[in-house]
Length: 51
View 1: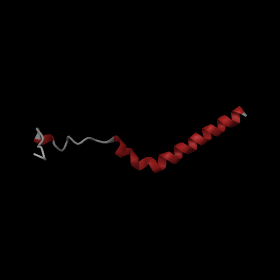
View 2 (view 1 turned 180 degrees about the horizontal axis):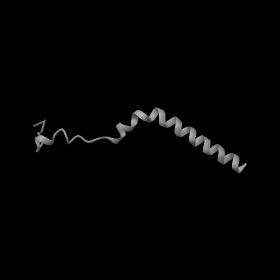
View 3 (view 1 turned 135 degrees about the horizontal axis):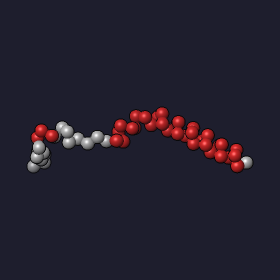
View 4 (view 1 turned 90 degrees about the vertical axis):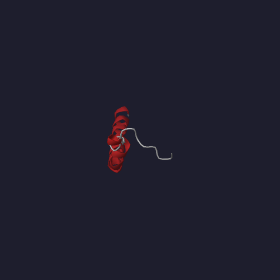
């Protein structure tokens, strides 16, 4: 009763969902500093242009 069996036994392994977040998490140490650098460059160029 605590472990219900799936209706289709052949597709039990294929029923696992692919999590998009887990496929991107390992790239965060590279993406976040690069995005921060680009953002700082854009903000600095805007500040110089408006000054």
